[in-house]
Every structure is written in structure tokens, then in C-alpha cells.
Image (spheres, rainbow, N blue to C red):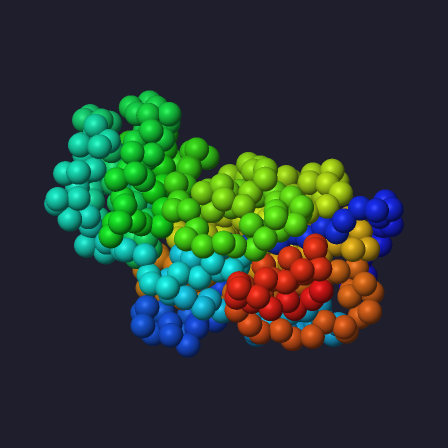
Length: 400
């Protein structure tokens, strides 16, 4: 596939776009059995469930060359392609995104598969000024459906978690207005400290009537700050601006981010990304595409997942056509959420890697296979944008 090569204004720096297709795993990691995730492969099993995927742009870049995918043949002239793996534990968004930028956790963050213990629950209720109901590991839609009416009567917040290191609070917008829910989440974030320092506290406002409750786009994530320096910090130190689209800024607690841009849906996040490509002369655009995880993955909606991939495929085609000579596009993921696997939680999987520049695409066949740690994405963004390296951070560039 050839991309348009638009001359750059003299003296400007390079641009890089990193698109994270949330939960689009491409095969179980070697330690997946320890997480109960042996044999998982989100992308392949989505493709099987819908009778094959139609992804001409991603396919031409080499998606079918990474792992067998029904409907997506190996590319005759792939870009850089391969599979990436984490260096640390975990299988949630915070672990995956942090590792993409070189932050590796030494130990897993706390989880509460049996719900939060009584003493902690009392502390939370005191700090939040609200009673709490549900308190179990649950799918969010199920928790809202089962406890929504009780919440409407009492005003108690719906508290739930999952296999991931999260504390989620749900409230109906008419019973507890979103600003009040957000304040409660901020207090919960402060309460969940030390041994209870979960990766994220998540606000989940919803609307509608009993029997048809629906989440709004008002989700907010209150994440731990990264425990160490990242490639985002290294980029900013060298004068490269970092633009975060979607939940990226939340996942990094704003650390290492110059500007945050809304992206509560894939459509909005992709539109923001294309707008930034039209407006920016330089820097990193770091994007999370949330719906493959939040809207389709956890709901085991393989058809919706496939449709979302189709929309991403079309948007990547538009981005490639708008790329300048010295632009880099990286497509990857953070973990999996295999629809063929029992349960609705994330799965411990490799992430795909597709990386392209206009020159690489014009060379037709110049894209080598690259398998390595997730941190290679951050190392490559730093090398591409600044020519620098960070010996103290994990990861090695796959392009420079």
C-alpha cells in the first residue's frame, strides 16, 4: 500500500501517532495459564465468530502476518509487524498503557475478587458520605441492572470491581448528579492508598429507567500516578509535545501529558486524531480507542467488535493518506478480552504491532518482523521524534 507523501515545511520536527485498539489481543502470553487465560486470542476468535474480518488497510500493513486471522491474509508487502509482550504482571489498561511508555510495575496492583473487605468498606462510606451497595466483582451492566432500582430509592452508590485492580462507582445522573459522583471518586482515590492502592477508581454515571438503564459518556478514570519516569516524560524533556486522546490522560494521571483531547467513543477519538494530524506540526499523538474493550469486549459482542475494527481500518487508511514524509504511525493494543473465553474480564495476551512511515510503505516489502516488549513503542516514539534514547528505560526502537 502506498501512502501519500506530503512535503513538510522546512525546519519542523517529526510527528508520531500511537493508536491503541483497547483489548485487541493477538494470542495468549506464556504465563497466561497463571491468570486462567490459556489459549486466548481475542482477534482470532472475534474473526472466527463473525465468519472472517474485512480489514483491507490493516491487512495490507501486515495484521494477518502477525497471527492467523480469518479473512485477513498475510500481506505481500507488510510494514513493521509483530507481537509485543509486557515485562511486568497484570492484564488491565493501566498496566498495558504504562508499559507501552516504559513504566513496568514490579508487583501486581491489589485486586478484590471477593469484594472489598468490611473495614475498608466502612472507611469508604465514611470518606464518600454515601452508603455503598453491591460490593462484588461484577460486570458493570449487570451491577447497574440488578442494583439500579435500589440505588434510585436510597441514593447509595453502586460499588463493584473485577479481576482487574479497579474500584468502580455507578450512579444515576438524576439521583446523584455526575459532579457529586466525581467528587465521591476523588475521595475514594484518596482513600485507596498504600496496600489498597488500586490502579483505577472509575466513575460510571448512567441514565434511563428500570429495565433499560444505560451508561452515559461521562465515565472518568482516576488512576494512580505512574511510579516511575516514562517515555512521555522523556519526550517532553526534549521539547516534543504529547497530545493524549481518549482515556490516555486519565491512565497516566496527567503525568507526561501536554494536552488532553476528549475521546469517549471511537468516532470522537478518531476524529480528534485526524484533526490533530491536520493541525500539528510536530509531537506525539497518543490515542486510546475504547469501544473494542468497554462497549464490545466486556459484553462479548464479537459482531460489534468486528464493526469497530472496520471503522478503525477506514480511519487508518485516511491517516496514511494524510501522513507527511517524516510521520510515523503505530497501531497496537494493551491486553485482550477474548469473546470465546469464560467470563467478561480482560485476558493476558500479546499486543499486535503495526508500524508504518510513507517511505516504508513506498518500499513495498521493507517491513521486517519485530517481536519485543511493549516498551519498544515508547522507545521508538522517542527515537523517531528526537533521535534520542533512554538507557534507563526498558525497550528498544524498532525504527529510528
